[in-house]
Each structure stands twice: as structure tokens, then as C-alpha cells.
Amino acid sequence: MATRGRVCVCELVPFPVLSGTCEGVWENEQLHSLEERGRLLLSLQYLSPPEGAAAEGQRGRLCVGVQRCAHLAAMDVNGFSDPYVKTYLKPDVEKKSKHKTAVIKKTLNPEFNEEFFYEISLPALAKKTLEVTVWDYDLGRSNDFIGGVCLSCYSQGDALRHWMDCLRSHGQRVERWHILTNELPKSLCPD
Image (cartoon, rainbow, N blue to C red; front, side, top):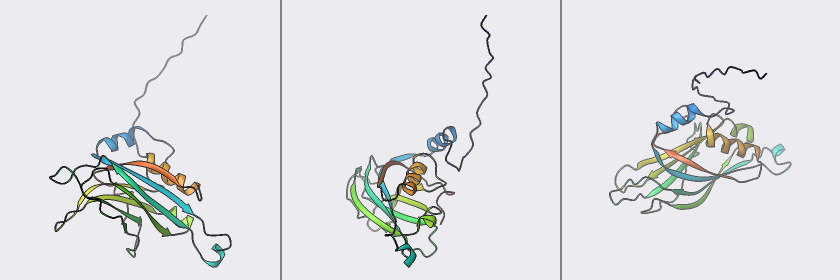
């Protein structure tokens, strides 16, 4: 005689998880409340200092590769944008971590292929947030924010996976696409 078990279906309550071990409902709801403004292909690579150099006070380097964007939001009346990318490693008390790509005119799918380097130790890097924003250049007016993404140990989803893969994969380049949203999570991108 077969016995039948009872199944209890409970409603799952979404909550934010900072450890990155759980994903799902909360992250999806957060992304759906934001407007997607295109995608950005980034590569990250942590380069350890040469052997013995750490003892001499040399630090490693984070290499941020801004490869390209796809399907950016059109910000100009001509149906295009004049995009460029800015990167910051935050917190940045001295305001020295800003890097900018060249402006690519009249496109929604720019190819940048530029790399930026940050000299930093691996333990210090683990406490930082990489803020990457895409802007539309406007001559004589303020530039328009297209979208952005923050990568850190407090991120979620693909941003967290990309950051953690970079921290774990010494010397290996890790490349991943990121969704650009119309606003950055304030708690993940400190000033």
C-alpha cells in the first residue's frame, strides 16, 4: 500500500542577501523596477605583484577593460547617443580613481576596447566597489546619464559573480556582460 504525503506550499518572502549565496525573487523584483538602458561588456583582471615585490611594498593591480556596449538608450534627438564610460573605485576619498574612455559619436553600440589600471592590494580591493557608468556626451550642456552598474562583494547576481571571479582568478581575465540600469543602487556605490 502506497502512502501519500502532504505538501505544504508556503509563500516565499523576498529579502536582500548580502552574502551572494542566494539569488532570486528579490533581485528580479529590484531589476524589474529599474529601466534597462543597454548592456556593457567588461573584463576584470587582478594582477598580483611579482614575487618578492610585495615585501618591497609593491601592490598588485586591477585591470578594468571597457570593451563595448550594446543596445544603449538613445539620448539625442537624432535617435543616437554619443557614449563614453567612466569608472571609479570607491570609496575614493582623494577623488583619484576616475577614468574615462573616449567619446564614440552617433552610435548605440560603441566599441571602446580601453583598459584602466588601479594599483591596489587584493585585501583592499575586496573592500572596494567598482562603479561603471555610461554617459551621453552633449556639447555645451550637461552630459546625460545613460546607465550604470556597481561591482563589489555587496552586489548581487552577475555583478557579484563577476567581482568574485576576479578576486579568485589571480592573473586570469574574466569577461562578462552587465545590464545597465537607469539608477545605481545607492547602498552598493558609496561616495
